[in-house]
Amino acid sequence: MNKQLASTGLILGVISIIAGAFGAHALKKIFTENQLETFEVAVRYLMYNGLFLVAIASYSFSKKQANSILQLCLAGVMLFSGSIFGLLFGTNLGINVKFLGPITPIGGVLMIAAWILTIYHIFRSKKENVS
Image (cartoon, rainbow, N blue to C red):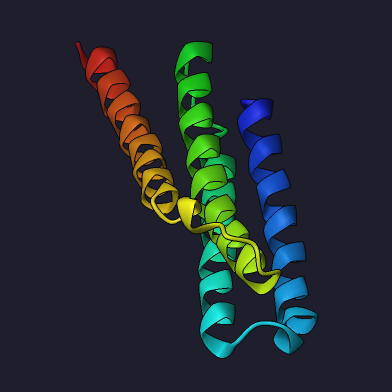
């Protein structure tokens, strides 16, 4: 088992649970309904990627492969969810954070790349094992 993938995934899961609880209780008084829905999207993608990392942790990736997947996934989550959090909180605090808007889709692309890279490594290794 790749402990780095598993532990990072579990940490993302914990962060998403804390953020979700925070959103469900404390932020209801601050955010609009639309903002809460957007916040929940960011929390959901944190959890999805946390579960993804835990799920793939038992696969036999090389250290380089696991590290590439982990870096793409973390960068994606930080840019995607982080930019959404920044936009929501910045807007509510009266801070101009519009520059974060274009960062969100870059994070999404990086998360997709992590998942595709995982598929590639899994199918490539199966192909090599058959030969």
